[in-house]
Amino acid sequence: MTFEIIGQDAEAHLDWLALLDAFRDGHRLPKAEIGDTFLYRAKDTLLSSAAWIDGAGSLVKTANVFPGNPGKGLPMINGAVNLYDDAGGSLAALLDFHLVTKWKTAGDSLLGAAQLARKDSEVILIVGAGTVGHSLRQAYGALFPKARYLIWNRSPEKAETFAAEHPETTAAVNLEAAVKEADIITSATMSTEPILHGDWLRPGQHVDLIGAYRPDMREMDDAGLRRATLHVDSRNTTIGHIGEIQIPLAAGTITEGDIRADFYDIDAGAMARQNDEEITLFKNGGGAHLDLMASRYILSAWQARGG
Image (cartoon, rainbow, N blue to C red; front, side, top):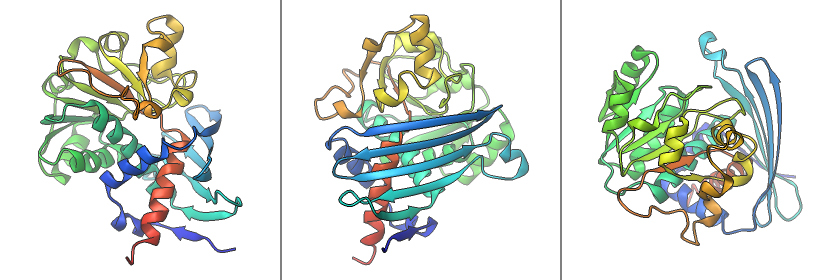
């Protein structure tokens, strides 16, 4: 049995816009079968995710999320990714966990923005100066190369460092003011209580929520959910699983019918901005089916690198 071992050096052969095409193609295949298992120890999480797509194969990804690791100089998230062949189920590739996670997570949000944000967006606010924030700066920079970027972080010094590492990026001191200035707000924090407020929003904005992945986590308050049209990457991996959606559902703030579309609705035209004044909100749930699609793209790009 032969299989590819793909590490960080594969990144030189990847392209954000090509990944969006791979995601769209993946959602034209039969709907993914997905199974997630969560285990908790205080604030630590062990997440095992599996996905199977007829025509694309299967994948198992294990993620250990330890929020205290950055204080020790260690990555917050570690794990492993196994990609399996569609025809016979043999191992097709072992992929670097951080590479797959980076491109899946930021690419997920980028596809949401490609479908929902105004094409003339000029100011993009990134909330959270961690690892995902840096990935978002790269990804959004590919789709909106002429945009100006703001970065806000609870620790202002991290925002200053982030801004110094990226062109056309400025540290924001006041979150409310930054939200009001931005055309796109993309948030990747570990918050369990909303830090973004609906009364800060203005017509025409696009909000991209990434950080919440547990049932007790959310980044946007109820007012924001009521003001915006709601979209998710997958109903199956957000409804009943992630606090950003499930908490307001349980409280009756929103209903499942308020979620207009997910990525499987792209070709039907449902995941699209209706007009320039609409406030669109996208929840990035990051299911294992997206890891599978991203891994297939990475494997393909790696195998074609000599072409």
